Length: 207
Image (cartoon, rainbow, N blue to C red; front, side, top):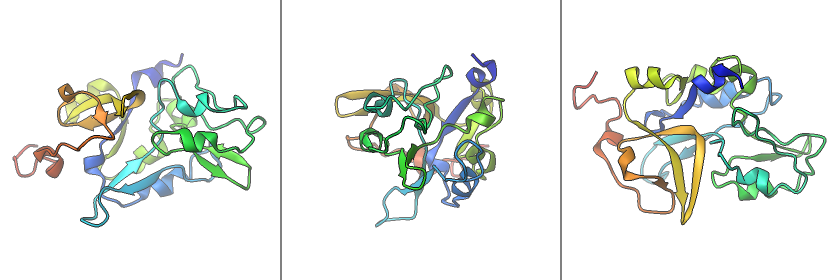
């Protein structure tokens, strides 16, 4: 295994997203998916405010997209990165698109292939940040070691989601206020926290 990849992690802090879409534009520059942007921004509550949240592949430990692929086209490499469907095998059935709990894979008609974020493996395998994280001005998308995170960042990291009764473990970490509350319950009621309203600690005087 490549020690550079194992030593660093990809982190999403949705409370820092400012909706600039720099990540969307930068994603097109990644050499592993030929000019296609494989990241998108979701509106948290479009009718109420302008908050956005970046959505990339979470690289599940047990990826549903690979499980439902009838052609065995989706592979998870030795570093835990779930890759786009292999072109010679992909039959364009879109099973993976429908099965992904995070709504990440996309079917592209021109190459007749499912494609998804592969964490810019050409870069991350060499210890470089994925393109989206390398340009994010607010560091809502971040790549580095756990030690660097603990030293410089605020919030706790979690790798587990729950969709109803189904747990999903991910390689990509998500920032939360309190990890002791357990997995992020996607189907449940969101618990409001003051820190999410003030992610940079401006009101608290945190530096």
